[in-house]
Length: 333
Image 1 (cartoon, rainbow, N blue to C red):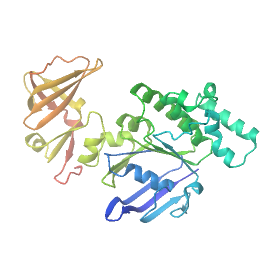
Image 2: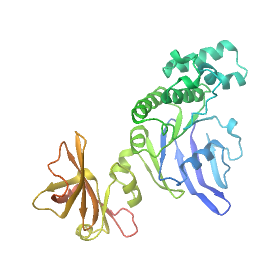
Image 3: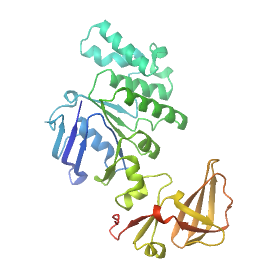
C-alpha cells in the first residue's frame, strides 16, 4: 500500500522553474496518468517522485513519511523507462532476476519469483533469449517484469509505449491494464502524450501545463467538464473546437467549446457556415475539417459522410453539449 502526497512541490534548475507549486494526493492502488504538452514537466515530476531529481522546495510524502532526502533505492519504487534499459548480454531470465540476485536471495526463491512474473507477462517461452532476439513489445514486458519482481509499492512508467508501433501499443496497453487489475493494491503513475493511453488506462488524469497542474479528474470528468480552455483543447482526439466571436456570444460566453461529435450538420442552414476543406473517412466515423470565419472546425459524423472537399456546410452546436468559457479561459457555470 502506498499513498503519495505532494505539497507545494517545486523544481528549478537555476533560474529555470520547471515544476511550480504542485499539489497532488494519490491514493494507494490508483492508476494515475500525467499528460501535457512536451516540456510541461511530466517526466521531471515522475523523476522527482522516484528520487532521480532533487526537490527544490516543497514536501513529498510516501505512506505519510517525508522522503525528500531518501535515496531512490529506499523509496519502494520501481521505474519503467521508454528505452527498456535491459542488459544486452543477459537473458530474459537474468534481466528479470538481476535485482533479486543483488539482494542475495536464494536461487530457488529467485527462480520461483522470476517464473511467476514471466508467466504473468507471457514471457515464459523467451526466458533463455537475449534482448536482441525479442520484439519491442517483448522487451518492454521484460522491463515491466524486472520492476514487478522487486515487489515495489509504486510503479512509475515514463512513456513506456512510445517506441512501439501502433499495433504493439494497443497490445501492450491491454497487458498493462491487465497487470493493474492483477495488482489492485499497487500504485501506478504513468506519463504519456497519447490521448488514448490516458483515457483508457487512468483512474484519474493529471493535466500539466508549464509545470503547473491545470486539472485532476477521471477521464470522463476531464472530457465532459474541462476546467479551462487549455484542458478542453488538450483532452480528446480530435481536440475540442474552441470558437470565439458571434457563436460564443450567442451562448453568453467568450469562448464556446464544442466536441467534434456534438454538431448537427446540414447542407442548407445552421448557426455556423463554412466550406469543407478536407475529409477523413475511417469506416465507422468520418471527420470533416471545415474552414469558417471563426477558424478551422472539426466535425465528426458517424459512418460515411455525404460531404466532399469544397462543399458548403452548415453546423449547429448541440446546445446541451456545449462548454462555455470566460475571457480568463476558465469554465463558466
